[in-house]
View 1 (tube, one colour):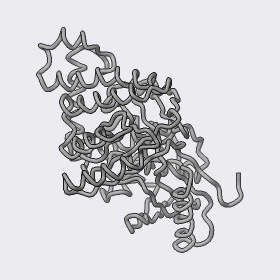
View 2 (spheres, one colour; view 1 turned 90 degrees about the vertical axis):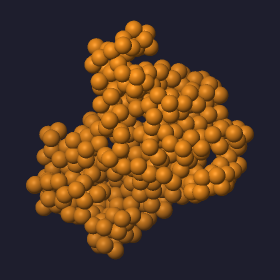
View 3 (cartoon, one colour; view 1 turned 45 degrees about the vertical axis):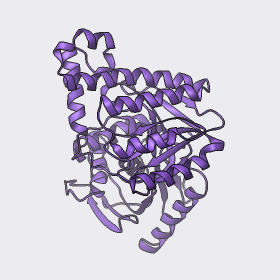
View 4 (tube, helix red, strand yellow; view 1 turned 30 degrees about the horizontal axis):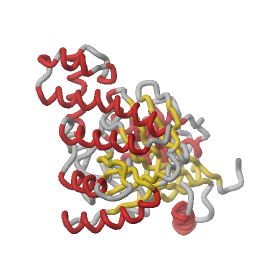
Amino acid sequence: MTGPRRTDLLTRVVNAFAWRVGGVPGFVAQAPGRVNLIGEHTDYNDGFVLPMAIDRAVWIAARARADRRVVVHSLDFEESAVLDLAAVTHADDGWPEYLRGVAWALGEAGHRLEYGWEGVMAGDVPVGAGLSSSAALELAAARAFAEAGGLPWDPPAMARIAQRAENEWVGVRSGIMDQMISASGLQGHCLLIDCRSLATRAVPLPPGIAVVVMDTATRRGLVDSAYNERRAQCEAAARALGVPALRDATLAMLDARAGALDPTTHRRARHVVTENARTLDAADALARGDAPAVGALMDASHASLRDDFEVSRAELDAIVALARAQPGCHGARMTGAGFGGCAVALVDARAAGALVAEVARRYEQEIGLRPALYVCAAAAGASVERLDGRD
């Protein structure tokens, strides 16, 4: 993250640390949220995604402790939590559960956490909006654990650890995309990620193009939603087609085995197969600076998510339609798991301000909810900054 917001959040957590803990923190760790341009519900099918880390993040100002305890205060929730690293157990108490999950997953990966830390955390990634606030928290926590304990920092490995925390500790069967882009984001670029191999290709955003995130002011809880059901349907489709994952399926295969799938499962699989193809095409189009082509693929992605995967809702459809109607908008789609949250639009930078103002006005007028729209920059992934003079 760069710019005034980075300075504000850094100052906020450092000042709060001085007041609540005392003195200067040893380090500040941060990890960004993300917006996915295209490639939705493909990650847990071993497919392709094209996200970018955004200039909104979770920040932790901390100091290492020698007693294997983590004592942390969240400025956003105005709550504190204490973790005993010698005996990490479930407490089911909201945001601290993500920290426990990361600590547990690090241990399961063979990292003995000899040092805890004490600190203060805050962030500006909207919670439940489809911008991966949970992955940002997981990777910021992992960065803090690694810095306090002298653990090696390998972004793909840490992304896997954070994903395991979300899957097996928190209970959301997410794919690897959110954690991978939060760990590995590159400033000014999207990242084409092969979710099977974790191979990546940096794809620059073309000059003069802006990414606008549009928060519908609707929320969903992934654990209680149909997210896990969609994943189970995809796994059932892969079994019926005789492939390891839907990444390995083709439309011809789907047509040939249509009788082996019920209509709903067939639609779910069709979305994933076509979305993988759209994502690869979009990465190529973005690399050659063809924003209209990327926008058309985003439009097709939204239709598939709405009709075949059935994870959109009226508010998402409305804000997407409003954005598309504005001058300078190349395309728009829902982003994230769905059932609420955010949409994303690819826009000429010179038209972004007018689009934000008009979509916000008309959405509130038509839907009765006040949205939050903001132009996002592509940011770097999780990082740490020492403040105590050590390297």
